[in-house]
Length: 75
Image (cartoon, rainbow, N blue to C red):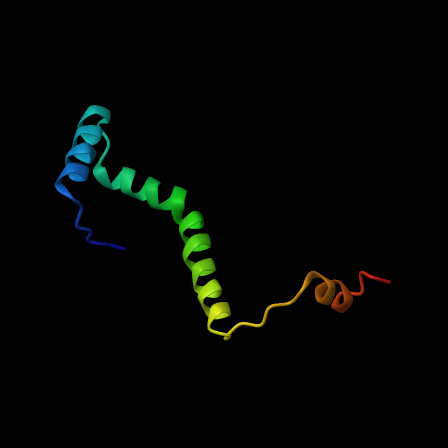
């Protein structure tokens, strides 16, 4: 898959320098950054979405007591 990304000049220059010094393509480092950080991005943005839905009353919130009772853990 090909993706086009606009980077600030300062970031692009740093990426160019790293690429030249290591003889690796810039795409290698971009791919590494995405693969190493996608989990954190998903956690942050999906959690933010759920929190917003809770605030709007679109998500039900359960207490720990309710969860324990539902799972039969208080027996």
